[in-house]
Amino acid sequence: MFAEVAPMSAFPHLRSLHHVNQCHYLSPPSHIYRSITTTTTKSRRRHPEPLVVDLPWVLNTSTPATTTIALDEPSLQSTDPPPVLKRSSPVTTTSMLNDPSLKSTWSHRAWVASGCTTVLVSLAKSVTGAADSGTWLQPILAGVVGYVLADLGSGVYHWGIDNYGNENTPVFGSQIEAFQGHHKWPWIITRRQFANNLHALARAVSFTVLPIDLIFNDPVLHGFVSVCSGCIMFSQQFHAWAHSTKSKLHPLVVALQDAGVLVSRSMHGAHHRPPYDSNYCIVSGVWNELLDTYKVFEALEMILFFKLGVRPRSWSEPSSNWTEETDTSSLIAEL
Image (cartoon, rainbow, N blue to C red; front, side, top):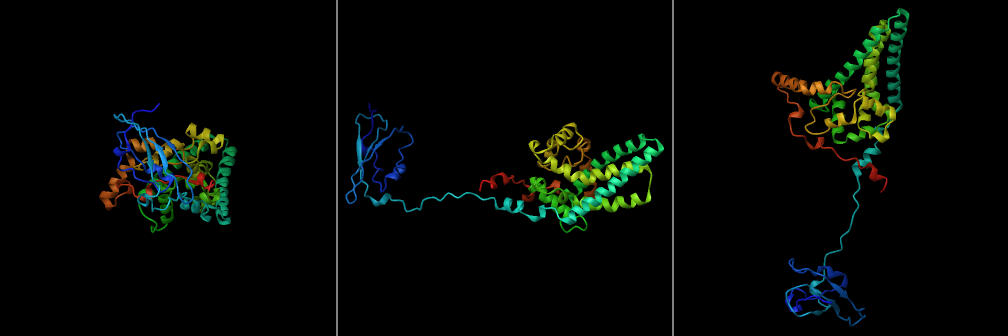
């Protein structure tokens, strides 16, 4: 059963088609409901037979129409080349993941070994000193204080290099540049090998703790030094875990994050959202709420601005260097 349709004369815009596959160029007016049944006859090589198209387009007319459309009119032939579908290639991501700078070198491993050695020597002196004196409470409390202050120190340092200086800043330039890149590609830290991620802090810990190991034997002092320096050296690993998915982490690490012993993924994730001016601490994050609630870093920024005239980066609109790019490494394996 056919619906009432309009005659072909009602559609002067339909003339001819060069190719059967180009029938999709026939577009009825937008107010017309279209239900098309198309029947074609096989074209001959020299004298192609017409294409017969039944057009039961519903209109308020009384004449059904079966329209014959010529196929030899060149005016509707498309001269545009067919579209070429290209698969996007994450060149930047691929080159980053293959970057040898993410790999650990023997130099990196040596510095991490050196840092761990100085920390363990300090811890051993604290334990043996406490055992000899029979006093454990003070070294343990000193270790707790060292753990808490390591988190505060990581926040202050992180705030400083996020907001001030550039790659040309003496001593800290490479760290500043690295943290700026970290905001654009935060997931890269999870691709760094262990010693590659820790060697810079391990070198600083080695030079700082070694003289203390050689000079002092106080178990309380070493209780503080060993825990504080150890947390600072491994803070970059805690930081990397805060960027990893739960499924890729050891259950013990997840448990420590959930308990607040290590900085959690949700807490540090807030730091990577505009305006990037909160949750700077990356050991346990225990200081983050206090520092952000009382706007401690904002007060320091005001002091530095009025005293030195230096504006922090957090006062400006984030540039493209801070706009996070998505981790497309999961797509690379499919290419």
